[in-house]
Length: 56
Image (cartoon, rainbow, N blue to C red; front, side):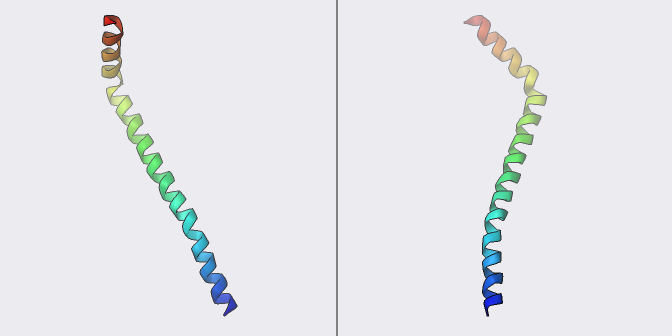
């Protein structure tokens, strides 16, 4: 019975690590999307910011 209790407590403590890993994967996905957006739209954003800066 003690072995079963120890096994259940091991699985419970393992869930926190799984949640942290899922958050890390979501954060990595958001970072990849942001980097890709900057690569494809970087020059357009730079031109818009230059226009705004020169008009001020």
